Length: 148
Image (cartoon, rainbow, N blue to C red):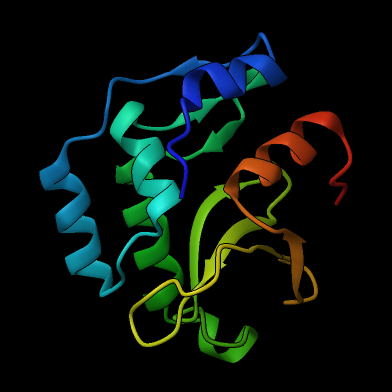
């Protein structure tokens, strides 16, 4: 996989981007350990450059590592969710649409084996393909090509 300069790439898509400092590698390892999931290479590469990306109106295009961990743990352990939704263990949420829907990678046996991004619809519990990779998720979401 070719290395991406994530800051330059996102800024080529929107002038409204706000970046954090690089994510701490120990925090990434802790997140992987607590979730039992290895982060996909593209997401790890982005986190090595910035701990999350905010877009227009401070919508998190990519959550900080701390939110990724907290939200994924909440979805996996919330007492009411097993009665309402299919299991969340096969998903690794990394961003939301600002309307309750969540963007995720799929997880199989503790590993993200596909680069594809999916969206979870919070009203229907549907899990629908959204983009072939993180880079195009950002491009399509910011350009309006990806609509929810």
